[in-house]
Image (cartoon, rainbow, N blue to C red; front, side):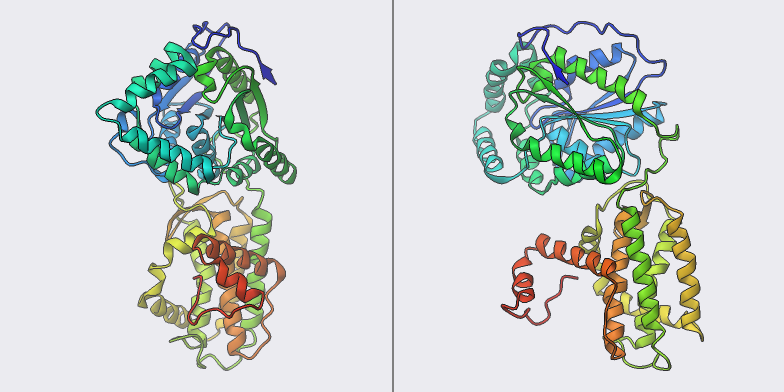
Length: 491
C-alpha cells in the first residue's frame, strides 16, 4: 500500500477523522524515537482519541519526563508492558503498540518477549540493523551535542528539526525536552538489539505487524532483509506476513513530516486489524509458538534417551559420578530437569525477564556454582528411593503429559525470572544431554544423544560462546587447530 500526503507542507494541519469509531475502541500505546518524547505524537493522539480510541504516549527512560532515569532495553520494554497492561485494566478490548525509530525497535523487542501479546503492531523507521558505522557516527554526534554549554543541545535541535519537519513538528519534538544523555545510553544499548530475530518471533506468534515507512527514510537500508525475515517466518508458521505501507515524500520522522498521511495509515491499520484479529476475547490467552513442536519434541527425546542410559546403571548407584556426586546424586541432579518444569508450570510469571536459553544460563551461572547445587543433587538422588528407575519413569510420564498440554507461550517463574515455556525448556534439554553424556561416560557407554536434542544443545552452547566473546577457541578446537584451555567451559 502507498499513501500520498494530502499536502506537501510538512506541518500541514491535521484534519479531524471522517470516520465513525468502532463501538469499543482500541487501546493504543505510542512509543517515541530517540532524543524525543511523548510530545512527538500530538497529531496522532488527537486523531486517535477523536476516533474513539484510548491512547497512552509513553516517555522512555532518559527522555521527556523521565530524563533523569537511565535508559536500558529492559527498562524501556517494561515501560511498554506497563502501558499495555494499564490499557487492558481500563477495559480496552484490543491493544495496539505503535513505535517509530527507537520506539519501533523496542516495540518489536517487547512483542517478541511479552507473556501477553498485543493485537497489532505498527512500526516505522526501524529497518536498519543496529550497530556498525552508523551507530558509532551517531554516538560521536551525540557526544558533540553533550559538549555544548547550557541548553545548547536544545538550541541546535530546534532549527534542525524545523528544517526537517516544519515549525509544528519541531515544537512537538523539543516540547518534551531533548534527551541527549538518554540518546547516548539508547544508542549504546541498541547494539545488543536483534530486530530481525524479534520480527521472526513476532510474526511466528501470529501478531499482525504493519510497517509504515517514509519513502526517503535512510533507515530503509536493510528493508529487504526485514521483508524476507517476515515472509520466511510467516511461511514456516502459517501466519500472516507483515503488511508494508509506504508514505510518499516522507523521511525518517514520517509521523511528524507527513502527519496526515501517517495518521490515515495508522487508523486504517487499526480498522484492518479489528477485522483480522481471530484470537478469543480473553486477551491473556497464550498464543502457540511456532517453535513449540520442535522444542517439546527435543525435550521428550532427551528425556527418553536419558532414561535409557539410567536403565544401564544396574547396581552401580554408589559408584563415583561427577565431582562430589556418586551416580545416584548425578541422576538425582539430572532429574531436576523434570522436577523444575513441573514446579515452574505451577508458578506463572507476571512478566518476561529472560528471553532465551542462553540468557538463562548467563543469568544463573553464578547461582549454580555454589555448594547448594551439590546438596540438592544428593537430596534429589536420595528422594528417588529404593526403585529409582521406576520413580523416574513415573515422573517423566507426568511431566511430559503436562508439557504436551501446553502451547509453549506460557510464562513460568524460573530461577532467573519470568520466561516463556518454549524458551525455558531448551535449558532442560541441555541439562539432560550434558549429564546424560556424563552418566554414559561413567558407565563406560558410548554416549550418543538423539540428533534433535544434541543439535539444540550445541546451538545453545554456540550462542553462549559468541555472546561471551569465546567463539575463537571453540572454533579452533572443533576444527582441530588448538585444544581448549584447561578448565574451559561455557556453562
